Image (cartoon, rainbow, N blue to C red; front, side):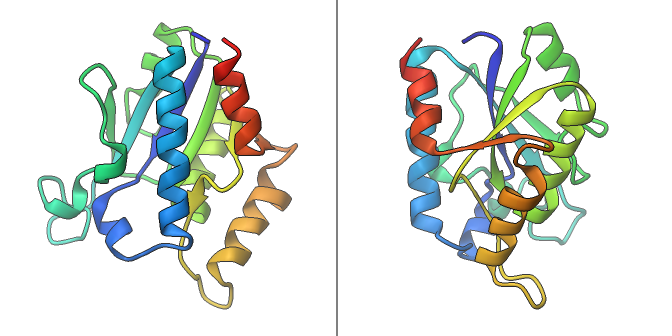
Length: 178
């Protein structure tokens, strides 16, 4: 599965410390995906949001670090970003292209911000994206609960428009079949 990359977006300690919806199950699903990807040789990359000084995701602070449950291994790159899209003003696209990556399995935080922008940017750049169900999370936003936000983006915005939303078991099966 060399043309596939598991892309983990913004699963950083400051966000986890705020206890997003379904936190424990979300992190468990990510660790399952990581283990399966590593075992089957799927490419893995991380994106890490960088806020300005004094903000929760300020580079170099404890909140900026990637969550302990999903720490990258030495060969797994981490791309810093300062915009919602993982592609804007980063080296992610050139790295993916050099690696022959065609399909992104996109997981992470926050559903309606950085995940949405990344999935739509990937679509515009010609990548095929897969979003495993339950592998993105967020917080309540205005009138909407976190569950409503997640379901809206997963089922009404992304699926069959910008990405394919699949049960995590289907994605794990893809890894295990290679």
